[in-house]
Amino acid sequence: MNKILSKIPYLGLYKFSLFVLLGTLAVSFLIPQYIYHRVWILLLFFFLLTLASLYIIEKITRKNAENFLAIYFSAMIARLFLSIIFAAIFILTDRTHVFNFAINFLLLYLLFLGFEIYGIMTNLRHNFKKGSGNE
Image (cartoon, rainbow, N blue to C red; front, side, top):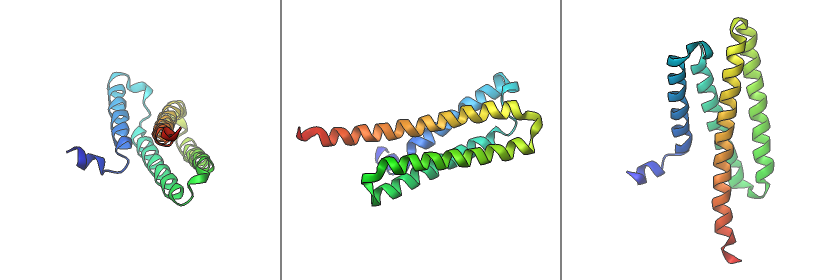
């Protein structure tokens, strides 16, 4: 079973997204006034954005590993601009729920960004430990 799970790409993202989904469901039942009514679109957007970001970083890094930081920060900037465009569209089309949208959007943005940073740091720490054995 572990061999099958280890072959699934970005399994950590799926687990994290499921955790965030369950948390969102719990909050929507406990205090629904703080959840944006289209939060599921936000969850899907951030899941797909993080998935695409990780995929692009991985593909480009395989070809050009020495420029990892430039690639990673470029992906973060692209992610930020896509998020701003997405948020602007939602804010302009649904002005009655702007406060709930803004809070939910910011919280999900930070959660998924934190997941991505944690994943990159874990991967870098693992690679650093491999390379430091020659000292």
